[in-house]
Picture 1 (cartoon, rainbow, N blue to C red):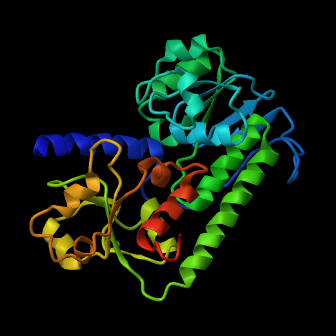
Picture 2 (cartoon, one colour):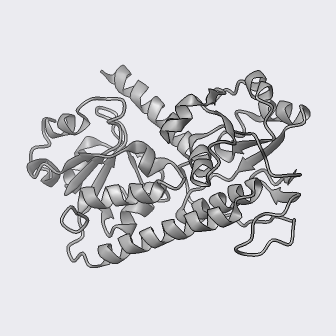
Length: 321
Protein backbone atom coordinates (compact mmCIF):
# COMPACT_ATOMS: atom_id res chain seq x y z
CA UNK A 1 0.00 0.00 0.00
CA UNK A 2 2.86 2.35 0.88
CA UNK A 3 4.53 1.62 -2.47
CA UNK A 4 1.27 2.38 -4.29
CA UNK A 5 0.84 5.66 -2.42
CA UNK A 6 4.41 6.64 -3.29
CA UNK A 7 3.72 6.00 -6.97
CA UNK A 8 0.62 8.20 -6.73
CA UNK A 9 2.70 10.93 -5.13
CA UNK A 10 5.39 10.77 -7.82
CA UNK A 11 2.71 11.00 -10.51
CA UNK A 12 1.04 13.95 -8.83
CA UNK A 13 4.26 15.86 -8.25
CA UNK A 14 5.21 15.32 -11.89
CA UNK A 15 1.90 16.83 -12.92
CA UNK A 16 2.38 19.65 -10.42
CA UNK A 17 5.73 20.41 -12.03
CA UNK A 18 4.09 20.51 -15.42
CA UNK A 19 1.28 22.62 -14.04
CA UNK A 20 3.85 25.06 -12.74
CA UNK A 21 3.03 25.16 -9.08
CA UNK A 22 5.61 26.03 -6.42
CA UNK A 23 6.96 28.87 -4.33
CA UNK A 24 5.75 32.40 -4.93
CA UNK A 25 7.97 34.97 -6.60
CA UNK A 26 7.62 38.52 -7.86
CA UNK A 27 5.34 39.12 -10.86
CA UNK A 28 7.00 38.62 -14.22
CA UNK A 29 7.86 41.81 -16.03
CA UNK A 30 7.30 41.88 -19.78
CA UNK A 31 10.54 43.21 -21.18
CA UNK A 32 9.87 42.94 -24.89
CA UNK A 33 12.19 45.22 -26.82
CA UNK A 34 10.20 45.40 -30.00
CA UNK A 35 7.62 47.10 -32.11
CA UNK A 36 5.61 50.22 -31.59
CA UNK A 37 2.79 48.11 -30.21
CA UNK A 38 0.34 49.86 -27.91
CA UNK A 39 -2.42 48.48 -25.74
CA UNK A 40 -5.26 47.16 -27.86
CA UNK A 41 -3.11 46.72 -30.97
CA UNK A 42 -1.88 43.47 -32.47
CA UNK A 43 1.78 42.55 -32.32
CA UNK A 44 3.96 44.11 -35.00
CA UNK A 45 6.61 41.69 -36.23
CA UNK A 46 9.48 41.22 -35.85
CA UNK A 47 9.14 41.18 -32.08
CA UNK A 48 11.81 40.55 -29.45
CA UNK A 49 10.80 39.11 -26.08
CA UNK A 50 12.99 38.45 -23.05
CA UNK A 51 12.07 34.92 -22.02
CA UNK A 52 12.27 33.10 -18.68
CA UNK A 53 15.94 32.28 -19.20
CA UNK A 54 16.72 35.95 -19.79
CA UNK A 55 17.26 35.33 -23.50
CA UNK A 56 16.22 37.97 -26.03
CA UNK A 57 14.14 35.89 -28.43
CA UNK A 58 13.29 37.46 -31.78
CA UNK A 59 10.25 36.20 -33.68
CA UNK A 60 10.49 37.42 -37.25
CA UNK A 61 6.86 36.93 -38.28
CA UNK A 62 3.58 35.59 -37.01
CA UNK A 63 4.11 31.85 -36.37
CA UNK A 64 2.15 29.53 -38.63
CA UNK A 65 3.21 26.32 -36.85
CA UNK A 66 3.59 26.11 -33.07
CA UNK A 67 4.68 23.28 -30.78
CA UNK A 68 3.78 23.45 -27.07
CA UNK A 69 5.75 21.33 -24.62
CA UNK A 70 3.50 21.74 -21.56
CA UNK A 71 -0.29 21.69 -21.00
CA UNK A 72 -0.57 25.19 -19.53
CA UNK A 73 1.04 26.71 -22.63
CA UNK A 74 -1.28 24.69 -24.84
CA UNK A 75 -4.42 25.80 -22.99
CA UNK A 76 -3.33 29.42 -23.28
CA UNK A 77 -2.66 29.02 -27.01
CA UNK A 78 -6.09 27.47 -27.59
CA UNK A 79 -7.75 30.25 -25.58
CA UNK A 80 -6.04 32.70 -27.94
CA UNK A 81 -7.62 30.98 -30.94
CA UNK A 82 -4.44 29.24 -32.12
CA UNK A 83 -5.88 25.74 -32.48
CA UNK A 84 -4.96 25.61 -36.18
CA UNK A 85 -1.40 26.80 -35.58
CA UNK A 86 -0.71 24.23 -32.84
CA UNK A 87 0.85 21.19 -34.56
CA UNK A 88 2.40 19.39 -31.59
CA UNK A 89 1.66 19.01 -27.87
CA UNK A 90 3.00 17.06 -24.90
CA UNK A 91 1.86 13.59 -23.93
CA UNK A 92 0.20 15.11 -20.85
CA UNK A 93 -2.09 17.42 -22.82
CA UNK A 94 -5.78 16.58 -22.44
CA UNK A 95 -7.64 19.89 -22.83
CA UNK A 96 -9.39 21.02 -24.88
CA UNK A 97 -10.58 17.86 -26.60
CA UNK A 98 -9.02 18.97 -29.89
CA UNK A 99 -5.52 18.32 -28.49
CA UNK A 100 -6.11 14.58 -28.83
CA UNK A 101 -5.73 14.94 -32.61
CA UNK A 102 -2.42 16.81 -32.35
CA UNK A 103 0.97 15.14 -32.76
CA UNK A 104 2.57 14.12 -29.46
CA UNK A 105 6.13 15.29 -28.83
CA UNK A 106 6.98 13.63 -25.51
CA UNK A 107 6.69 14.59 -21.86
CA UNK A 108 9.53 15.43 -19.47
CA UNK A 109 11.78 13.96 -22.16
CA UNK A 110 11.15 15.69 -25.47
CA UNK A 111 11.17 13.85 -28.80
CA UNK A 112 13.44 16.32 -30.56
CA UNK A 113 13.37 14.50 -33.90
CA UNK A 114 9.58 14.55 -33.85
CA UNK A 115 9.48 18.28 -33.09
CA UNK A 116 11.92 19.08 -35.90
CA UNK A 117 9.89 16.95 -38.32
CA UNK A 118 6.83 19.11 -37.62
CA UNK A 119 8.78 22.15 -38.90
CA UNK A 120 7.43 24.62 -36.32
CA UNK A 121 8.14 28.34 -36.50
CA UNK A 122 7.89 28.57 -32.72
CA UNK A 123 8.30 26.19 -29.79
CA UNK A 124 6.64 27.28 -26.55
CA UNK A 125 8.88 25.78 -23.86
CA UNK A 126 8.53 26.30 -20.11
CA UNK A 127 10.73 27.44 -17.22
CA UNK A 128 9.66 24.55 -14.97
CA UNK A 129 11.13 21.97 -17.37
CA UNK A 130 13.90 24.06 -18.93
CA UNK A 131 16.71 22.39 -16.97
CA UNK A 132 15.55 18.87 -17.85
CA UNK A 133 15.18 19.76 -21.53
CA UNK A 134 18.17 22.11 -21.85
CA UNK A 135 20.10 20.05 -24.41
CA UNK A 136 16.99 19.30 -26.44
CA UNK A 137 15.96 22.94 -26.60
CA UNK A 138 19.43 23.87 -27.80
CA UNK A 139 19.17 21.25 -30.53
CA UNK A 140 15.98 22.95 -31.67
CA UNK A 141 17.70 26.34 -31.75
CA UNK A 142 20.60 24.83 -33.68
CA UNK A 143 18.06 23.51 -36.18
CA UNK A 144 16.88 27.07 -36.75
CA UNK A 145 13.68 26.82 -34.71
CA UNK A 146 12.68 29.73 -32.47
CA UNK A 147 12.32 28.62 -28.83
CA UNK A 148 10.54 30.81 -26.30
CA UNK A 149 10.76 29.68 -22.65
CA UNK A 150 7.60 30.81 -20.87
CA UNK A 151 7.84 31.91 -17.23
CA UNK A 152 6.77 29.52 -14.48
CA UNK A 153 3.65 31.37 -13.35
CA UNK A 154 3.15 30.89 -9.63
CA UNK A 155 0.43 33.42 -8.85
CA UNK A 156 -2.39 35.13 -10.69
CA UNK A 157 -0.43 38.19 -11.80
CA UNK A 158 2.16 35.90 -13.33
CA UNK A 159 -0.51 33.89 -15.12
CA UNK A 160 -1.81 37.11 -16.67
CA UNK A 161 1.75 38.03 -17.68
CA UNK A 162 2.39 34.68 -19.35
CA UNK A 163 -0.86 34.90 -21.31
CA UNK A 164 0.19 38.33 -22.55
CA UNK A 165 3.66 36.98 -23.35
CA UNK A 166 2.28 34.17 -25.50
CA UNK A 167 -0.18 36.60 -27.06
CA UNK A 168 2.66 38.91 -28.08
CA UNK A 169 4.78 36.03 -29.41
CA UNK A 170 1.96 34.73 -31.58
CA UNK A 171 0.46 37.99 -32.79
CA UNK A 172 -2.64 37.67 -30.62
CA UNK A 173 -2.18 40.57 -28.21
CA UNK A 174 -5.76 41.78 -28.42
CA UNK A 175 -7.16 38.31 -27.78
CA UNK A 176 -4.76 37.89 -24.86
CA UNK A 177 -6.03 41.13 -23.35
CA UNK A 178 -9.60 39.88 -23.70
CA UNK A 179 -8.75 36.58 -22.00
CA UNK A 180 -6.96 38.31 -19.13
CA UNK A 181 -9.78 40.81 -18.66
CA UNK A 182 -12.32 38.00 -18.53
CA UNK A 183 -10.26 36.13 -15.94
CA UNK A 184 -9.82 39.24 -13.79
CA UNK A 185 -13.55 39.99 -13.91
CA UNK A 186 -14.47 36.46 -12.89
CA UNK A 187 -11.91 36.50 -10.09
CA UNK A 188 -13.29 39.81 -8.86
CA UNK A 189 -16.81 38.32 -8.77
CA UNK A 190 -15.56 35.37 -6.71
CA UNK A 191 -13.76 37.68 -4.28
CA UNK A 192 -16.86 39.85 -3.90
CA UNK A 193 -19.04 36.85 -3.02
CA UNK A 194 -16.40 35.46 -0.67
CA UNK A 195 -16.18 38.76 1.17
CA UNK A 196 -19.79 38.28 2.30
CA UNK A 197 -18.93 35.06 4.16
CA UNK A 198 -19.06 35.63 7.92
CA UNK A 199 -17.88 32.26 9.24
CA UNK A 200 -14.59 31.27 7.64
CA UNK A 201 -14.16 27.53 7.19
CA UNK A 202 -10.98 25.56 7.82
CA UNK A 203 -9.83 23.63 4.75
CA UNK A 204 -7.41 20.77 4.25
CA UNK A 205 -6.22 20.04 0.70
CA UNK A 206 -5.03 16.46 0.25
CA UNK A 207 -2.90 15.96 -2.83
CA UNK A 208 -1.91 12.33 -2.21
CA UNK A 209 -3.75 9.55 -0.38
CA UNK A 210 -2.86 7.87 2.93
CA UNK A 211 -0.56 6.74 4.35
CA UNK A 212 1.77 9.41 2.89
CA UNK A 213 -0.55 12.41 2.98
CA UNK A 214 0.83 15.49 1.24
CA UNK A 215 -0.77 18.91 1.25
CA UNK A 216 -0.25 22.49 0.08
CA UNK A 217 1.23 25.04 2.48
CA UNK A 218 2.01 28.72 2.23
CA UNK A 219 3.67 30.21 -0.84
CA UNK A 220 1.82 27.87 -3.19
CA UNK A 221 -0.76 28.73 -5.79
CA UNK A 222 -3.45 26.68 -4.08
CA UNK A 223 -2.87 28.38 -0.73
CA UNK A 224 -3.49 31.70 -2.49
CA UNK A 225 -6.68 30.29 -3.99
CA UNK A 226 -7.94 29.20 -0.57
CA UNK A 227 -7.29 32.69 0.74
CA UNK A 228 -9.18 34.24 -2.19
CA UNK A 229 -12.34 32.30 -1.33
CA UNK A 230 -12.09 33.54 2.28
CA UNK A 231 -11.20 30.18 3.81
CA UNK A 232 -8.36 29.08 6.11
CA UNK A 233 -5.75 26.58 4.97
CA UNK A 234 -4.99 24.41 8.03
CA UNK A 235 -1.51 23.83 6.59
CA UNK A 236 -0.95 27.54 6.06
CA UNK A 237 1.89 27.57 8.57
CA UNK A 238 3.80 25.00 6.49
CA UNK A 239 6.04 25.90 3.56
CA UNK A 240 5.37 24.67 0.01
CA UNK A 241 4.20 21.12 -0.75
CA UNK A 242 4.65 19.11 2.45
CA UNK A 243 3.86 15.75 4.01
CA UNK A 244 1.56 16.18 6.99
CA UNK A 245 1.12 13.79 9.88
CA UNK A 246 -2.41 12.39 10.11
CA UNK A 247 -2.60 13.14 13.84
CA UNK A 248 -1.84 16.78 13.09
CA UNK A 249 -4.61 16.87 10.49
CA UNK A 250 -7.10 15.39 12.93
CA UNK A 251 -5.99 17.79 15.66
CA UNK A 252 -6.50 20.81 13.38
CA UNK A 253 -10.02 19.53 12.61
CA UNK A 254 -10.78 20.84 9.11
CA UNK A 255 -14.37 21.68 8.20
CA UNK A 256 -13.81 20.69 4.57
CA UNK A 257 -11.33 18.28 2.98
CA UNK A 258 -10.48 18.74 -0.69
CA UNK A 259 -8.85 15.88 -2.60
CA UNK A 260 -7.16 16.42 -5.96
CA UNK A 261 -6.22 12.88 -6.99
CA UNK A 262 -9.52 11.49 -8.22
CA UNK A 263 -8.09 11.39 -11.74
CA UNK A 264 -5.88 8.40 -10.85
CA UNK A 265 -7.69 6.71 -7.96
CA UNK A 266 -11.35 5.81 -7.73
CA UNK A 267 -13.58 6.96 -4.90
CA UNK A 268 -11.02 9.39 -3.46
CA UNK A 269 -13.56 11.10 -1.20
CA UNK A 270 -14.98 7.78 0.02
CA UNK A 271 -11.50 6.62 0.99
CA UNK A 272 -11.05 9.67 3.19
CA UNK A 273 -14.51 9.34 4.72
CA UNK A 274 -13.82 5.73 5.74
CA UNK A 275 -10.50 6.32 7.53
CA UNK A 276 -10.25 4.90 11.01
CA UNK A 277 -9.60 7.47 13.70
CA UNK A 278 -10.94 10.37 11.65
CA UNK A 279 -14.55 9.95 12.83
CA UNK A 280 -14.58 13.13 14.93
CA UNK A 281 -13.14 15.42 12.28
CA UNK A 282 -15.81 17.96 11.28
CA UNK A 283 -15.34 17.31 7.55
CA UNK A 284 -15.89 13.57 8.11
CA UNK A 285 -18.88 13.97 10.42
CA UNK A 286 -20.58 16.34 7.96
CA UNK A 287 -19.39 14.41 4.88
CA UNK A 288 -17.68 17.49 3.52
CA UNK A 289 -15.00 15.70 1.50
CA UNK A 290 -14.94 16.76 -2.15
CA UNK A 291 -12.67 15.79 -5.02
CA UNK A 292 -11.89 18.56 -7.51
CA UNK A 293 -10.40 18.47 -10.99
CA UNK A 294 -6.64 18.65 -10.43
CA UNK A 295 -5.97 20.27 -13.81
CA UNK A 296 -8.29 23.19 -13.10
CA UNK A 297 -6.67 24.01 -9.77
CA UNK A 298 -3.03 23.50 -10.79
CA UNK A 299 -2.54 24.45 -14.44
CA UNK A 300 -1.42 28.06 -14.70
CA UNK A 301 -3.62 28.97 -17.64
CA UNK A 302 -7.08 30.38 -18.38
CA UNK A 303 -8.91 27.65 -16.44
CA UNK A 304 -7.18 28.44 -13.14
CA UNK A 305 -9.96 30.90 -12.29
CA UNK A 306 -12.48 28.12 -12.87
CA UNK A 307 -10.42 26.13 -10.38
CA UNK A 308 -10.91 28.87 -7.81
CA UNK A 309 -14.64 28.67 -8.44
CA UNK A 310 -14.51 24.87 -8.03
CA UNK A 311 -12.89 25.32 -4.63
CA UNK A 312 -15.40 27.99 -3.65
CA UNK A 313 -18.35 25.73 -4.54
CA UNK A 314 -16.80 22.85 -2.61
CA UNK A 315 -16.15 24.88 0.54
CA UNK A 316 -19.13 27.26 0.47
CA UNK A 317 -21.85 25.55 -1.59
CA UNK A 318 -24.59 27.83 -0.26
CA UNK A 319 -22.76 30.97 -1.38
CA UNK A 320 -21.39 29.64 -4.68
CA UNK A 321 -24.26 27.75 -6.22
